[in-house]
Length: 232
Image (tube, rainbow, N blue to C red; front, side, top):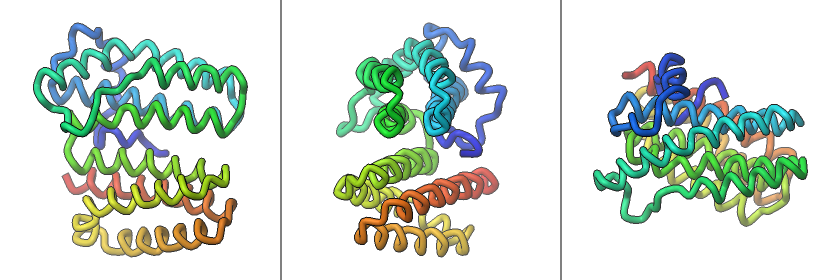
């Protein structure tokens, strides 16, 4: 992934700010929230890269880094709750639960379960992204998480879960598709073909094909992000 999708257009300066931002300083301003979510999303992305490459010590260090951010994320959650920013269907993330699960899988050094748990941590960030980001930013973050779920469940042969992830991708993509049709019609056409190919691969239970297509779709999401960044 070229850059975290949890805060489109956020700079490296914002990421550095997030590392030093004390929990009590979080007021819910756009800049502060973007910095925190950028850094948290960046950690979960790179953590999955480390797991996929078998860099277990590096993955453990990134988990520790995420744990250090939890008080700040909790403060953002409190701001969101106080301001009524959470959708009534959503609940605030319970990071300790997901962190404990990931820590156990990192200790076992089991690649696919660890990847699944790491992506669950990323998914736990989505309610906060929804509270502090634009609909387009949320859609891009959601597409990333769902595509990773599809990739991992397809590799595991969990076809019902993979099809569910594909439905989630289609529903989420529908929210941004009109903008892509207008500003990047070729990209939209590519994504439509990719999703059709993914549906076929899942229907035929093609592990390698489905995993490869999910990886290609993650690259498509990078291009969606770039389209929105360039357009604003």
